[in-house]
Image (cartoon, rainbow, N blue to C red; front, side, top):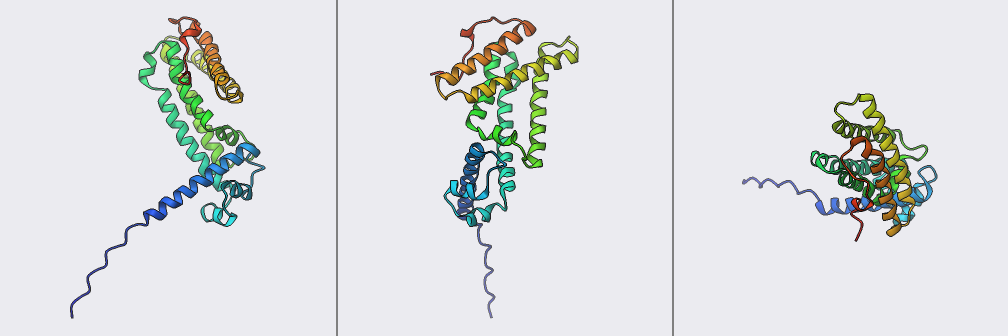
Length: 225
């Protein structure tokens, strides 16, 4: 009696996986909208399901609760934020004149925050999951450290505490300006606010780092058309 040929293992249901990933993306985008509108604490899975135009039962097939949605969304956002850091702080940028350096560093960070307003809404909200808070704190510390390394590069003979103080002040100015940028209407007003933020940073850093000029014409943003 001849043996039956072995059945080959069925390929993974990639089409089903693709549909599942699209559904997850849909739910995360809906969650981002709800978190931006209502904040994390006031948001609910029912509101997220409504925003995504799915039933609560469908949402629960992918996420057990609101915290799980926030953790997944926060993780993806912080991955994208790290990529923005990578674009900003490169060895090549250190060779640029200060106005160009500010363009290279500030633009990717602003573009990320403008494209993802939920980042600040989620990361700075009350009662966010502890895992998100820990990852955000680590990301924040990493960004400040990159700024400190950048300042120390330009001031190799300065005491470390002076470099830290200058870097922390520049970072605080950026954070304050970022809030104004996000509050400005998209378009010419936002572009002008970005330029004003760069001008403030330039006027603070130029006397410290030296070798550059104070000129609005030296400041450009990638959004100018």
